[in-house]
Structure formats: C-alpha cells, structure tokens
Image (cartoon, rainbow, N blue to C red; front, side, top):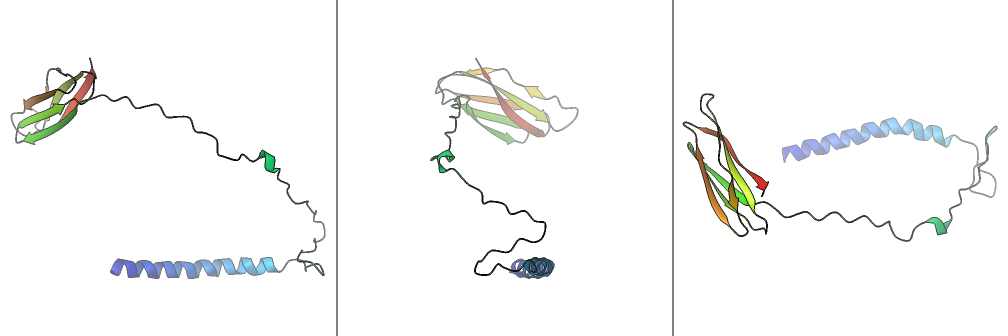
Length: 151
C-alpha cells in the first residue's frame, strides 16, 4: 500500500512540474498571426512561404503488409537430461526423444581447488533411449552439466 501511495504522489508532482514547464511554450505559440476573415486558416506572416498540402497517391500504399520470410525449422536434437547433486555425488538421467543418436557426457566441477574435476566418457543414447551417468568429487560439488554431441 505504501509504495502505491508514494508512486501516486510522485506521479502527481511530476505532472504538475511538467505542466508548469509546458504552459509558457503553449502561451507563446498562441501569439501567432491573426486568422484570416471567414476562414479557420492563419494568415501567413511576413517573409513566410505558403506550402501546398501534401498529396498522397493511394495506389502506392500496399493493401497488405509485406510477407515475412519463413523462419527455418528448428532441428530437433539432443537428449533431455536431469542432473541431481547429492553431497559429493552427481547423477544425470538422460532420455532421448528424438530420432538421432546423441552422445552425452557428464562434466563435474569440484568446489575445492585441490579436488580434480571430472569429465565422463561419451555415452550414446539412441532414439527413445535412456541412460544414467554418474560422477563424484572428494568433497563438495560446485557444478555439474551434460554436454551433447552428434554421432
């Protein structure tokens, strides 16, 4: 509630300040040449050129917007992998729902500087196949991810 009240007050103050800045400009514009008798047009001032109104050819305006080129179809590839970290153990469960074989590899980055990071061997996951990848650190795991490669 409080945030809305302060926002409303700031909007009100801003509008009042902006109106104060715009009013002198609006008053100055109204002091132009007097309108011509019998018309709503302003009489041209001394030294001003009168320009003809712009003419638009309706035949040049397209009836519909131009057609956008079709976006290339996104190629479906890559197994869907879920990674779980439990203490110093990492397990990734991968399922390939696409017709091409995917080579998946588990990468484990350990938190301690002296702990060796691990990159697992590539495992082929065929169409509609499942695989479980595992890795570990001696102490804490900083991050883990699965990379994909076409066979």
